Length: 105
Image 1 (cartoon, rainbow, N blue to C red):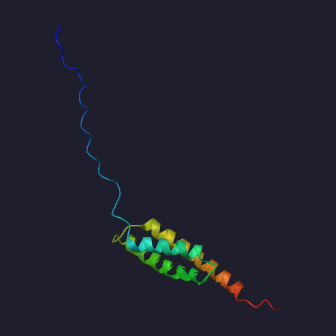
Image 2: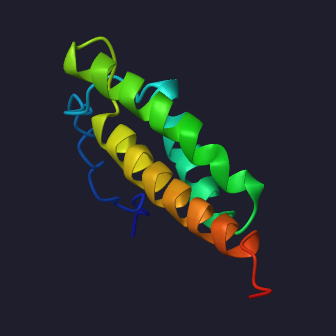
């Protein structure tokens, strides 16, 4: 009786190469900053920090224009920053007008 080495299963095939990504270039810094300041504007709308909606609007409009011209990406982030900045600014003005109104009458 001779001893034969144990048989191992065949090696698996090599993995397929990664497919190219369908994504475009990374999002622009302006659109990301617009989104961040828009979110902060909504979260801090009860204070003066809610006025961060103004830079969110400016950066969102600038980023949207750059995306339209093909110089940057992040169009969706720019729109979200625009909307959040506008909502935060309106809420801030509403809260501050109520806070500083004369309730003595």
